Image 1 (cartoon, rainbow, N blue to C red):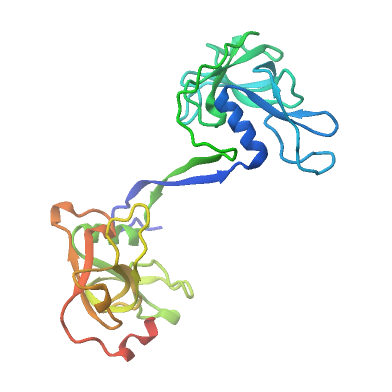
Image 2 (image 1 turned 45 degrees about the vertical axis):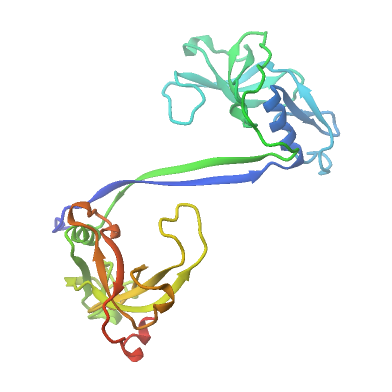
Length: 326
């Protein structure tokens, strides 16, 4: 393959989602126990005690009705050494992940055992829970397990928790990747930082002659390659739009405001951006608009280099000129 004609851009991207769930009547008792510095399990109809508790009897399928306390001391049934710390793990220094069968339980609980080296770990060793001072009902209310038969009683909980028998837990989930842009994306992003709008023209097939912005390396219809980079003007027309009236977390503009699809002059597909500098109820299909760029020293490798679009004051475009782009 030939070398790309543009510097290929890369960036670290992180996606974070706060997963929120109600624990229900059984697991809520487990969470409330952790807040109090106790560990509880569920007893099935055959007498088996599971920790953490299960919500339905494995033997009969009936909902669990009996929750019992178990000891904060137990036996390591198997383990694996963790030599390097990763963000989010319970212990900073090297530690062991272990399955621990607590006294009074028939199942094993996965948790961390804090020891100074792997040589101190063994299957069958006795360990006890070490509690955090501030506890919210999460499994990491147990900071870690330590070698030894004797567990210190949990201190009085210093965290403020809502009242109620049903516990709601929020777990932030984050994925971080390194994204490498294509040659077309790289040209497009560099263009935005330079105050230019760069698209691509498809050379053949069903999209022959079509100009895509943002650019594409091939036609999405039949895979025909792009043959030309095209610098587009920063003016266009509103094809369709939505007035945003509902506030939401992270919103940077006070509603109402307009999110619209803008068809740049000379392009063949609209893209989404903001329409500002006019009352929301005056935005309409066919309105002529122009880009409002952020100051040159604030531009970046993203569409954020355009603050928004605003009306030009020119006459509206005829409907037939954009009807196929709706």
